[in-house]
Image (cartoon, rainbow, N blue to C red; front, side):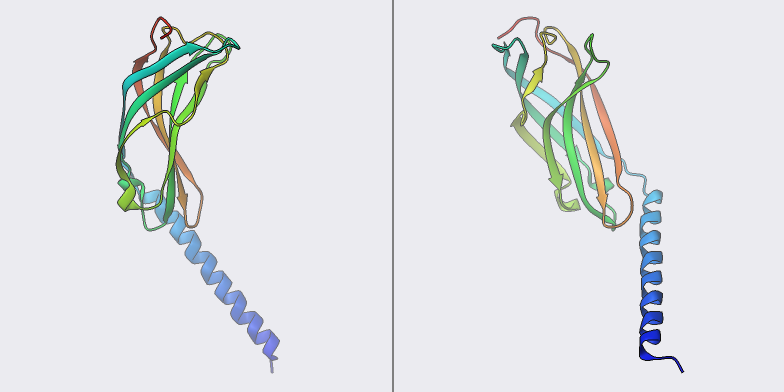
Length: 167
């Protein structure tokens, strides 16, 4: 006969195997979700556009950020990290990204939002490259599942331009 230890080991191994199979099935089921989020970022005002004493350009903006990210949520979604970044090119770098705002969306009920805010983080360029600069505002999101791998995607909004002169 098998001892109690052998039987407990068999039951524990079986339970862990079933749990792993359920986690794999949960993670795999996310591949069939095809989300269709929407987002819009409007610049309401350039509060200031100045050259700092160290020679770097800095911009403060008032933004209207609206999004409907509810389609990102499935039964396997724990939370969604979302952020808005300004993206632009300079002679030194093909892609510069500056995070302007971020947030954590804990549930589907909070996934539809409209926020009126100034940029949460400083919008600074190392140098004097901002005058008349074209840039994109991009909403990025990272879906953090309860089990499985994280997914990330973005919506790029083009057509923004900084002023030609400091204010």
